[in-house]
Image (cartoon, rainbow, N blue to C red; front, side, top):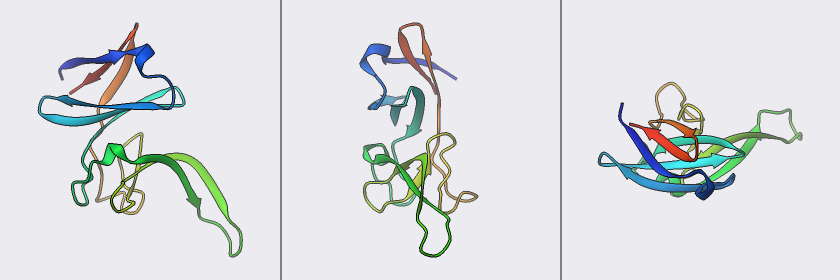
Length: 116
């Protein structure tokens, strides 16, 4: 893996994101509630710019006429609404067969570093 400094930590506060080009790949880097995530910026469904989508929660399985909201963060594709787990990139609809590539990302001192 190759180490890439993508920004300074102060430039990526909680709730923010950026898209970078690393080794010919477009990668979204997110700071969601203080946790860092990096995912390939391409939805495996139709190639949409996935990392331009919103990070949201989702409806949890519940009884009839009962609505429970899960605050588990998912990245929702801006084109067709496919949802992907920020941690492992797995699709919420087809977790065994559909996923987006994730990358190791860390804060090292005052730098945000992605390993590709």
